[in-house]
Length: 464
Image 1 (cartoon, rainbow, N blue to C red):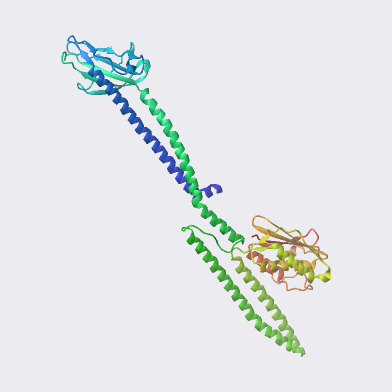
Image 2 (image 1 turned 30 degrees about the vertical axis):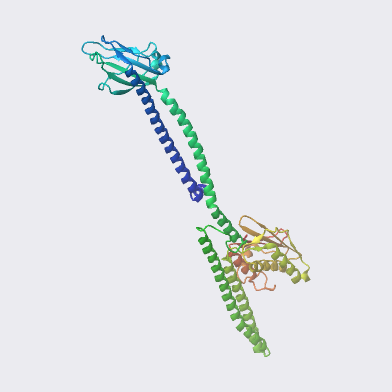
């Protein structure tokens, strides 16, 4: 059903369907129209030829004083002499006041011993009539007749008839119709091929536009590039202008956030310096310690919200792409130096070069660095990082062999300020920052038990 809706919404399918429908209708109408015109033409020629033979028969008719009829000379078409040739003539004596009628008083040799069963005459003398009747062997015939009166015996009217097998008319029509439909079928196939080529070539710029948008979304390009038709070029220019404007807005938002952070850090630094200077007396020492503690807490919150604002802005930048392997390797080298005294074995499972995060490098460093640092703090001897990806997500797994965390405490640790052990240095903001940044990107964190016995942290992020 979903595929059917997709086909209905396809511009290519609509254009092809409309074109094919028009081609089929046009060919069918043209076929029947041309076949009908040719049939009418053949019928006119058929009856015109019969009329010519009838005129020749009339010109050669001789009638004596006793009412007998004869031909002054035989008709020119040799088919009249061949039995059942399909072309016949016949002369009937019509009934009058003083004589009775007789059918076939004179007839062509092609009739052999048969007689044409003509209907009664219904028109005036000399005028042509057309009839359809059964001929020899039951074959349908087309006939023309004429009634004449001889000057010598006007009381003995005769009717002249010339008939021909309708197969002589239908066979050319059938042959023409077969050739016509074959030619129209070939023409239709050619038109269909031309329509397909036209649609494919005409919509090729839209496919290039789709690939360009995919490249921007995947981070391989910052804007749509290349030449497009005049009908598409304004759309490309407007889209690139929107991308540029969006990037400018994000840059200004980052600048404002940074300015705010620096504006807050300056008075905090002044307060910290004043607290350090006032630490001599006991009372002043307590106040200084309180001020230093609150200043440090304020700084951490400023840093936290600054990172959050930066990540929220970065999520709205199309085309962001950060390869995972360089960032992971750099962080692991840093962790080995920071925790060198503990002699930890910090390893990275082989990472494919195509593994990439669909966001800013600073945010990936922030999230991954917090998780690695947390694992190193609690690990006994080993920390391992590995990653994989599916159709839309990049999944990073960090295992340690530390004491682990009870299942009922895992969700509690994702709250801002929550800590598993108050004796271990830290503010309790690390996992909360990672969780919020991941959620801003449409991902998240899961805590589980590692096969090594410690904590397993699973970080899900959008892939590039």
